[in-house]
Length: 109
Length: 120
Image (cartoon, rainbow over all chains, first blue to last red; front, side):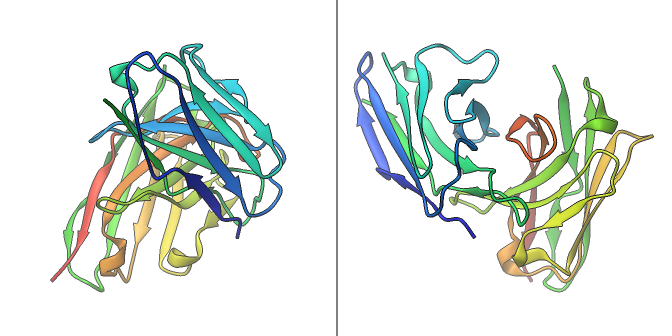
């Protein structure tokens, strides 16, 4: 099973600043990586797929990069609604199935 | 834009059974693969099971293999998750989610989730 490791566990950033979240895969997942955002009490929302493609309706301040085993989600000019938990997910190793990272909690100061 | 609506969650004793339903609307259901993803209280996301659009392909995570069965009725636009031999560690919010495309791809539509609590 491919293990996805996210860092940091928690990130606290001021509004208007930039946040950088990392995701590492235990094996090469090529560019088959997605990012999701989850607010408390809500379902996750797809932000990025294929490592760097924004999903429909996602603002341009969200960008993804990386390939292979190292990936980054960058959120420029943070807004209050960006708080929550961010998850990465690999979908390269199929079957047996998908795996998610443990999440990064983003707090807006 | 498509919608997914889960139902069937509740409180069940260990060893019991429960069937979850996921009703879809607003997209071409019969060609869409659907997964179940769960989230234990205060924990991260865990993929549970997936079914292809025509139902011919079914897939399970190791922790539920042999206990859970995924199925679908394309005439009703609904996916089911039959959960047997439930354990305390199955306690979670269960989301159904649609894959962007098949073969496997990220989930672009999620339901609001249904809570399953396994406790005596």
